[in-house]
Image 1 (tube, rainbow over the protein chains, first blue to last red):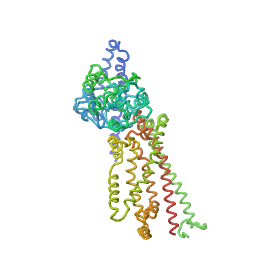
Image 2: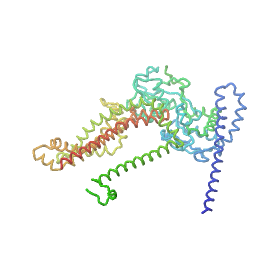
Image 3: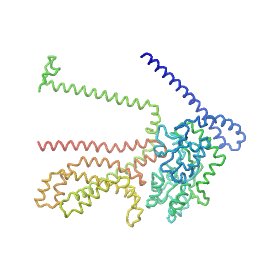
Image 4: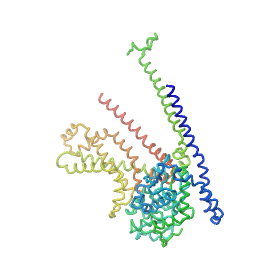
Length: 317
Length: 288
């Protein structure tokens, strides 16, 4: 009996020691986090001084390099990058609702980021998480979640976002032969019934900027909003611009983009990948995204997957 | 009544009714134990929740006073729409369901088509999930672009609820009609009342009284189901809470909406119990 007790104590002390050891790297993580924020903010605030800060940046990236090596990352599933997206995922963000095909902007961005971080394509695992499930408090079963999450301060309090992988604006879509299609200013839109998907910058834009006379209708998905437009229950829908292009060009060809909606710099719709609050992985993903931005990969992918015509009128304010 | 073997009488004290006294003592002791155990149970549960590591975060996301103040006006105005919807829908449901139940309760071969129609209606509608009915009617019918047919999502949402609940409620009525003794029907018929008159003046009044608790139960259920019309873009209370949640990732709006729904459903539940109890006593008094 006594032998057993001593054995137990021995086991416990080993476990305790192990816990202590595994706890140690955690405490150093915030420090590493701080160093990575320096290079990411520096170029945006003072673009002229890039030359001056260059040695600094390389120094820190070298230092953080170890932290962001695949084998040192704390991942939901070790050795794999688990990425969540919506169910279903819509084009042009994901093509054919199959994120593993590397087609569609968000799928392509994820594989580019993974490669930049040192993962092979096989090491990227996809999972499907609904919007409500993804934002619920508590531990997440994904490393990254990508489904056109707009970065806002309020959301940032309860989850973490990477730096934006795409910045866009809002656009208004209506049937080409409808009355609202002739609108030229925000003022013209106020008397119409407008709709948008829940939780989008599009909805915020209607409520805060357009402020229509009838309250905006709010739908679970863009698909429902399109049904309502078809049913004549609303006159127009606000989408982010790439979605608007796709819907008018492919899905509802009798609709057209009435116009892009004017937005100030801070009203721009910035899409970021979502992570669990405090996930140290953020710094490494940010680093990869910054690298992809500066070498032009993000722009090239946007050009490949997101139609970008320049003849879209911008509605006046 | 006496309890000669009761231990309390062994002490030599004389009690006019030791049994009642014991019952009183046990009642008091029972109440005390119930109070104590509730206190311990609730205390432990609260302690477990409030000291859990994630509590501050849950509090911030679910019970956030600032978010409460911000979301309240939208949720309360949406909830007012819910109240108007379930009151209006309930009136229509009670009426249509009764018509369907009466159609199903008609006897004789001549009424077969009407009976068959009501059976088909009830079977079909009860078999379709209510949310699908709302989506099909709400997006489908207006898309047909028929002249003179309303397009309003609110109209079709309520229509779907009325149709669905009428099918269920018709079955409640029918159970009530079947519970009236057959002799009542036969007596009425032998007095020269037509089938419809028999239903209207003899069977229905007795049937409805039997099923009022079941009807109120359906009403409580309807109170919450009306919020499903939000899938059509209608901004009722739950939707307003969702909109806030989706924008801020904060759940306080849901708590607000839940409290509002409780505030109307609990009184109805208490009323149902009170009514059922009163009805039971009256019947006992009558049969005694």
